[in-house]
Amino acid sequence: MSRIAIVGAGIGGLAAAVKLAALGHHVEIFEGSSFVGGKCRTESIGGYSFDVGPSLFTLPAVYRDLFLKTGKPLEEELELLSLDPAFEYRFADGATFAYRGSRGALMESITQAFGASAAHQWQTLLERGSEMWRVARDPFIQSPIAPLRSMMRRKGVVRDSRIIAPHRTLRSLGRSIVSDPHLRMLIDRYATYTGSDPRKAPSALLTIPYIESTFGAWHIKGGVGSLSRALAHRAESLGVIIHLSTEVRTIETSSNEVTGVRLENGDFYPAEIVISNADATHTFNSLLDTPRQAAKLAKAAPSLSGFVLLLGLRGRTPGLGHNTVLFPADYDAEFDALFGSSPHLIEDPTIYICSPDDAAMRPHADSESWFVLVNTPGTTFVDWSNQATVERYKNQVIELIEKRGITVRDRIEVCEVRTPADFERENRAPGGGIYGKAGNSRTAALSRTKNSTHIKGLYSVGGSVHPGGGLPMVGIGAEIVCKAIGPAS
Image (cartoon, rainbow, N blue to C red; front, side):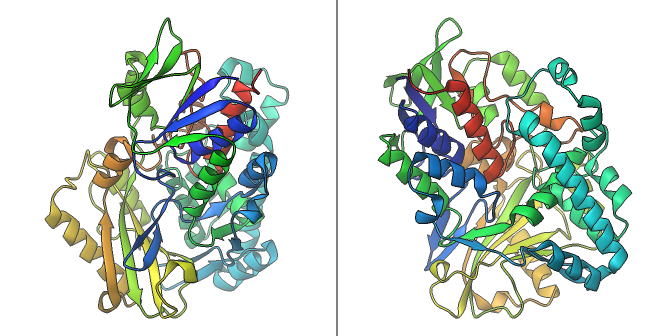
């Protein structure tokens, strides 16, 4: 049995703790905040509840497998609700379409909105995404990052490279398949799932629409943050000790091998294995003295950040589904503002509204809890401590929503704002980046921080390391680490 210390009770840390405890290890988690889940949590304000991190649950099989192999099935812990449609997309020219759950219904929806040719092209796109997922899942996504030389020696690498198209961007490959301008905007949006620019992000992100349309989009009753609490409960039932409000000052090493963690109060917890669920930059800049690794991370640009409104509203909005995206007239202007030479606030941004039809998340039937997200540059480029800037942008976002025919201002009962400065402080994320480092290169997936490190006994999990951000990828990353550590001897 190994003594394992996990730094951070985010989803990656919790998932790793559950699996490792089931494998017979003694696991303790040290979390600086007073709650579990990291970014994945549900907050209650004035009777309204909001998912303040992930608001969509995809690839549930990752967590179904984890729960099933460590005790009761996931569905005995949480109630999963299938979303159909997964999204409604509204465009500046008045066009709309619903991203339906079944493939047939989706094709019908696209045909009604943009024509049969557009539907056929989207089907071709999904088929390409399916091929990419088949090729990339085992050797790249569900496995540790291997040296490029060994990857090039893999059987079938030439054929697989043609499918993945590693030298093409998401935009270039997407536009070679799809010609409708509305659907092209949707393709571009998938880059923002990783905090990246579609003009530079890898074409392999075309796996996202395939995953959404094949494995579905889900809501967890009571909020997606319920997943964090369920993981913590499972971990504790297996003997994991979770220390909340317990900050780790440093990860201690000797002769390039971990010896444990030093807490802010000076206490030392010895451990043969340490897993960091902190942002990779914080791990190698602050928790460790590793100048080479820190310098490498410093060269990579942080992902985009976000400006969030948590709105508790009186009344119900006619025709508003669970997930609604309001696209601007000029999407490239948004990417220029986010990723150009001088990043700045976007005057007409894409607006994402999550309004769960979940009685557990609102005070009464005639009310709505909205999570509103707008992509923004981080703290490096905008002074988010300036309250006048925050107030102006809040009013601007509300006004833009109302211009699209949705009444907001007169219905507000609760309004809280979260800025990149909040994300930087709460998550120790440089610049307030939501997704770690931006994937603004065609080989971004291969340049992420590895799960195992050059220090013996030290591992990393979470959205800032391989295989990436989002609940499914974080869960897969935790599984990679657990396989590397193995069962207790």
